[in-house]
Amino acid sequence: MSDSSSSHSILRDRQDAGQSLVEPLRGYAQRPDVIVLALPRGGVPVAYEVATALGLRLDLMLVRKLGMPSREEFAMGAIASGGIQVLNEDALRVHPIDQTDFDAVVAREMQELLRREQAYRGNRPALRLKDQVVILIDDGLATGASMMAAVHAVRAQAPARIVVAVPVAPLETVEALRSEVDELICPLTPEWMMSIGYWYLNFSQTEDAEVIELLQRAWQRESVSNPPGREPGDA
Image (cartoon, rainbow, N blue to C red; front, side, top):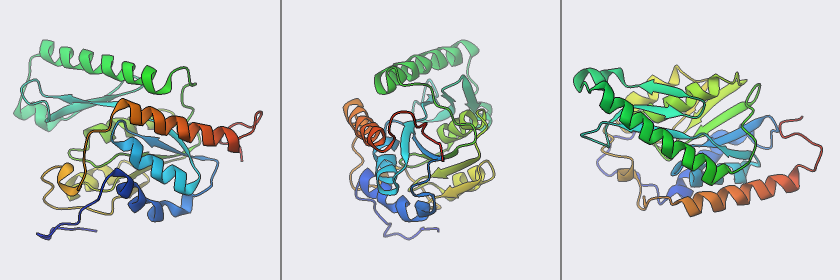
């Protein structure tokens, strides 16, 4: 679906964005072999709506954008859990940067990734994605660098299927990602993106406290529906 009209469609907030993904993902409802992975922080409230509505497990795929030293908002790549690194070769060609500066950005973002891992997941066991259907969710895509890193990190664990679901992303990014995954769902694909926040009425920053609260709520629900002795993912 493409929306390039001047009066653009607006998502109320991330909860509304999550609801926009529920129907397109309805076929995965209540399946024990399906897990929803949110890209924190903004992707967590979106993914929570999907996981709750469809009765699916929820967890995280930790990803950090590598911003250009001179232009933080411009992604020169991304890193993800498991030592995955994806580079935006086009960006680095146009804006080449010193290896020392590049390494400094990677080190800083890796530190933040590890901090979030500890803050959000604590001692929760590492993800086991082999033979699982993995649905990756974020609150929107711009360049797609972070999602590409997430896809690579998931693929390294040999899942049965990788699905990317986002409420809004530019057509160009959607087409580039589509060939990397088994299924891509994006209800709103403007040709002219502006920014992710442009498509939201409320795009306030998602704080750590909200991420932790939503995850704890989801995990509490799962512990009730998965009695002791039953492995999540068992049919």
